[in-house]
Length: 237
Image (cartoon, rainbow, N blue to C red; front, side, top):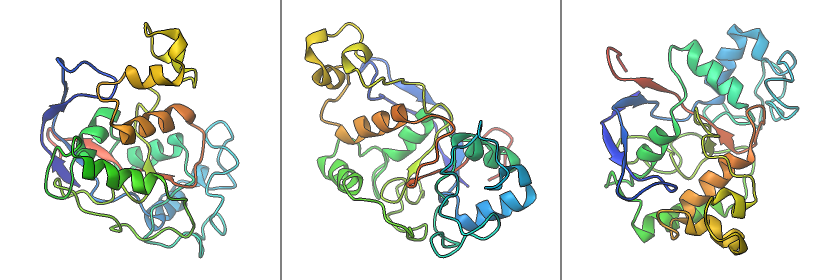
């Protein structure tokens, strides 16, 4: 795990005059891999594909694995595990004495480019992210360490998989942006969702919020994985 020092940022749906503070925390250098998740389900049978309760994972859970304890050709050992629900990702992190990162922690750490810890306003950086968002996901996925190592030392925050966060549904988007945008003009429909943002040009962040608003905790998505975090006080990486 790597340390991300304390700081602040302005969320997509926030107030420019009131940045959100983020305490220092540890975050996994890479997304969790199939190899690591296989060890977890081996030790925790309730999270095996054939054993998991429907309440905690839908029918897509680990659907690309060959069997309960065999990841197979579509899930290489060093590739990020996907098709795991929020419940499963949370359980994995807790089993290792960790937790899922919060939305603010993830967004704060993900603003970093290779050489700048706050590159979110750079057009080239957002273009790089959007280029990945526009590509279809095909299995098998590449191994972790595929995209780039950002200024915090974290690999693949963008360019490999979407990632679960602890409070992924903190910003609920119903799809009816005229409702989501609160007091904005109800005639603006989809445009109202953009006008309610701090930076309407930050389409990459908008897509992440939309993605989070479209899933439920039991959903398993082919291109969604996760990594773990940990409070920094009194903890060793």
